Length: 166
Image (cartoon, rainbow, N blue to C red; front, side):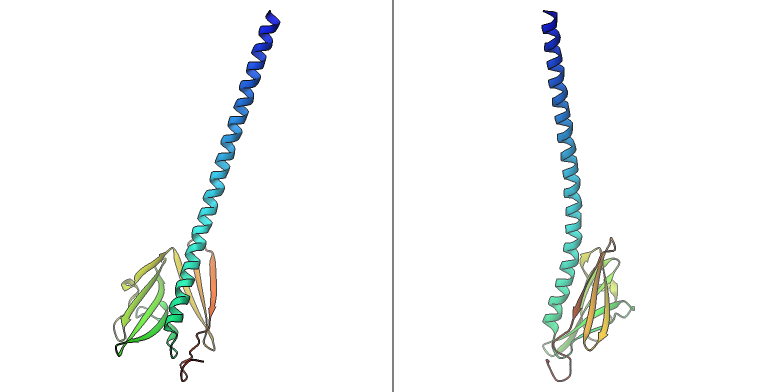
């Protein structure tokens, strides 16, 4: 009788131990899966911000690509910016796309008005822009996120300002 009871206790302990090992393994798998998901989501968010920034800028360039209306310049306070010239009802305006305080910003303002970095509308958080004129109407636009990851695009506007679109 004692051997049967001992066997029963051993079987019970083995079953409980096996269940505990399974439970601990399941918890580890869930924790590892949550960390992988979190890291993937963080990378996806950063990538989305850069892609969105570049797509937005490219679309603005396409919309404003008339008679050499795309250039690289500065705001009145010296902040580098992409300038997109436009005319509405015979009045000249300029759209400035730039970064200030770690944000991508846009400022649409009538020509001749004071354009300062603090006046723009924030578009994307955690994005720094840089612009480079490579000559021949070719521009490099680079977006850098808060983690230091950079993504660039080369832009060649169709119109050169030399008699219309080319």
